[in-house]
Every structure is written in structure tokens, then in C-alpha cells.
Length: 153
Image (tube, rainbow, N blue to C red; front, side, top):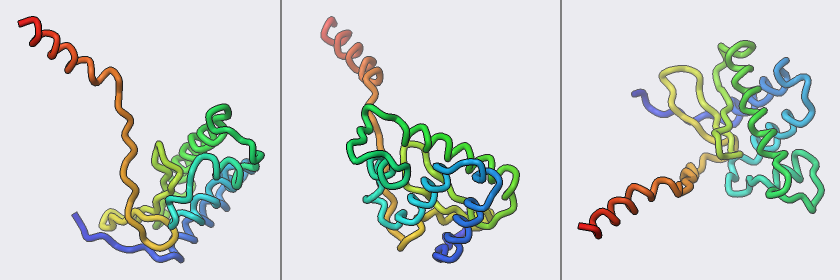
């Protein structure tokens, strides 16, 4: 594997502007606002959350409830699809791509060149947030079954 390369703020801004000017984003009002918002505060990943995106980027009222309204999650899904569409066709040869990892609203800037491996937020380089893991209830059943079988013996 090659060595990591730090991306400059200029490269990240160019990637954002390329996406915002693209045909893929030209027919939407909310997706460009969503993308710009999360990219501009990406260096402060701890400040990006579903409520803040809903209120500040998508114009939801202050009484917006993330539990009752899935607008941000739906828009994030649509944003991921638009970015995929952008980089598979219109901007297939761009230098830096923006990714919005599933389960997160923190974008990553990824060099498209195969010898570069960096993926970082737009602001100052920051430590990557720990992946969010959700315990699966069904994952415990084999242990429960094993424990019951052991107790029966």
C-alpha cells in the first residue's frame, strides 16, 4: 500500500464545488445545502449530528424531532446515491471524491488516485471517529443456547 497523503483545504473545496456545480445536484435544493453544510463543518466532526443537519441545513423547525421525522436520514441516503451517480459518470476522473459513510453525517474526502489513501474531513485533520456499533439481539442467541445446553449437561 502507498503512503497516506494529506489533502489540502483547497483540494477539498474544489471537490465540494465540483459536486455542487454538477448536473447530478442541479435539480435539488436540499441535497446541495446538506452537502455544503456537512463539508464545511467536517473538521469539527463532533458538531455534526442528525438534529443539527435537520435544523441548520434542511430548514426544519427548532422543535424538529429526529425520532418522529426521518427527513435527515432519507436525505442522507439520497445524498449518498447522488455522490455515487456523480462519481460513476459525470466526474469519474476527478482527483478527490466526497464520501458520506453509511451511519454517519461526517463526509470523507478521498483521493481518487490509487496511490493515495487519505480520507479526511474538510477542516483541520482530526482523528477519525470510532465506528458506531449496535449490538444485535440475535447475536446473543448462540451464547444463550450454548449456556442452556451446558447447564442441561
